[in-house]
Length: 401
Ligand code: PMT
Image (cartoon, rainbow, N blue to C red):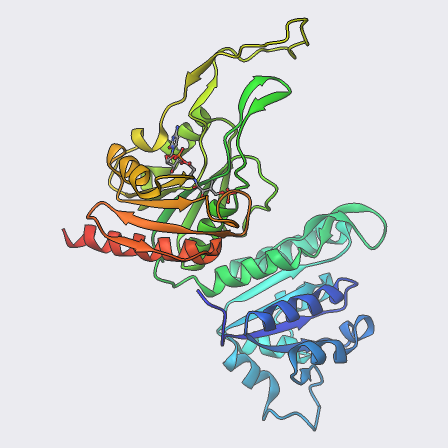
């Protein structure tokens, strides 16, 4: 799902977080969307319209009686051309007005006049957000089909710590992509993705793991979501935020991942295993921290972990990854056949800038019918879309059988 050419109407209301909306507008422009900003009167007290004009290179809306607007009837034209309306930050006051269907400013009028999906990102004091009045208003908007992202927990303008912060720009972008992609080519499909390196405990403070950052699996999960799929992401602990609109199940060990995958694939159309699963685990993890001994050598006995992909079978497309530093195709093909997969992503980790814990990846896609697609080094998100293109083809072939 590309955002390029989409029309985003960004409603900005009077919150200290309004400055973050400038960063959001800038990110949307970078994604080549057309951004029309509507500012309420109180938003203009926090940030000057010129800031938005400078990043969007477009007129800023907000005055119902503006005589110099290039649009005929601003709110109607904005409402009609919007692919999505995003209200970020949304104050308690604006949320209350919108829940009541009030139309006393350009934002209220636009929201009433649009058929586009609406994303609301509240930002306010934690007590104001907790208040039953605000909670009821948010619930009413949700019931009308609006999506709500956040607020996040953290330090608020009042100095208090609580739930009320506008979510970060990255999460807002994820939510916008997800909403715009709802009717994509994976709509109605359920996709299970695994990500990260499993952690196999030695004792309560130590574990065996690997360098997987989870970036590849998260990219696949986000790409599938942005094409309309229902996504379950089974992840080990990573530094990455949970993607908006994706159900995340956290696990540590290979055995936990196996149980979570078995559970998640019940209704799945595809399983994509990007996780780096430890092949072995300590045979007898200690319940207590192991103390340093006098001996110079410490032997750790390992036992084999279950092979998740080999064990989990069913009527869904099964995709594996093979991270190889040598004999890429030979090793990947061996895994494709041994695990009877539909597709394997032969991941060349010998290329600089490819593989573990980096943003890019180089791979060859090999399917069970012998088709090969050699791809250049590309962003993990781009590779994710290439993999999903192939998964969609395989799903189509299954239906045709
Ligand atoms: O997370 P990143 O930092 O972004 O890095 C991404 C990645 C390099 C981890 C990813 O692109 C990748 O290549 N993942 C597979 C790692 C690997 O080497 O897997 P494998 O060859 O050990 O296993 C082959 C396949 O079987 C994999 O899909 C794996 O998830 C699965 N497997 C492996 C062992 C096991 N016990 N059970 C499994 O299901």
